[in-house]
Length: 179
Image (cartoon, rainbow, N blue to C red; front, side):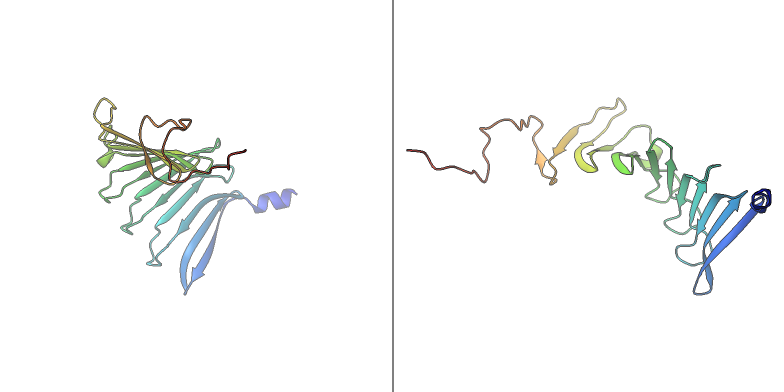
């Protein structure tokens, strides 16, 4: 067993080739996965980087979505299932979108142009389904518009009460009157 353990010491790199070009590279340090590098458009430059912790679990990932050599999307993973994402949608080097995930399901998305401290738009999700959009955020964290949505992305009024039986519906099931 000592021989097997000493065989894992040091850094080892493994490659995957596509059309004679390196598409992926896995780097192991002392027997644990440390990094994964990927060239998604096969131009010879890495545009997807995955970093792992000391136990070989992903701790962060970066994507270069416009292939200029700089990351535009940064994912941060945690052991408790909460993940965060920062996206630079206009490719100026400053994040514009900030998302929060729990157990791989989106919970909230904030749009803060050029990394502003204040959100211009906040989208709230329940079970991965968009339920609310807040627009027109100001420096106090207040929003001018608050729209709630049903599971089919139909806007609902704010004072919507699902227990209101007097609400008009397009379809009503009526049973025959008993004699």
